[in-house]
Length: 271
Image (cartoon, rainbow, N blue to C red):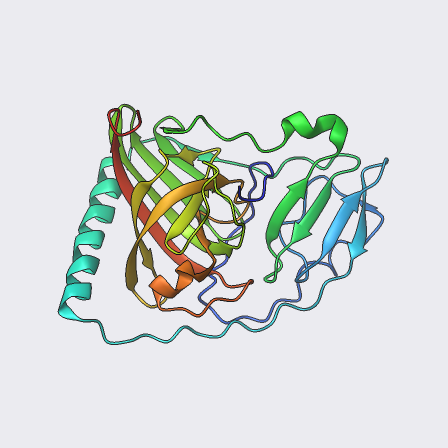
């Protein structure tokens, strides 16, 4: 299963832009009492909150390296047609969902003993709860279900998941795609290329759901299959390892990109 934490947020950042981040380590000093978990630190930073809820830096990270631009290739007529169909569906979902409520999900409040791990881009990768409050950690929805209709926003990367309908409808996720290398998925399945994990606290479709997705940095379209779920503190979709090759990319453990996904559902599919 994908790393388990709790629902998380941050602010807005377009990862397609090649910007050099030093993280906010300089702004949030160690042994300083903070009211919320920092959205971003130096790459690889690990922080922990002591008994007085003061933040301690356990592992000092490194400056986030400049993000290399993703190369665009000339698309075939078939690929272009897929993009046009995807664009029509995305606009349809947005139009039908424009009057739905919007919910903004916050990072959990710091608690004594809580530890936060930041990824290679300095964004939240995992929140580890102390044993005495572990029941408050990641709680996925029952498989085959989603949050009530609405748009749910969270994360430093401007992530949003829009859900339209209850017994039948559609889901649109927009924001950051990350990758992971676990070996076993949600159904004790061996994970393989083409598998993905959704953010289980908001969108936990049935095992094997076919998901249409697009790398917005190079316009490569790909179908992936939901065979896992996880906390995804700052992402809308987690692609299993070499599955990133489906998006015209070369795998590395810290790779992420701006993307979006959608799928349609009905109650018969979720049984």
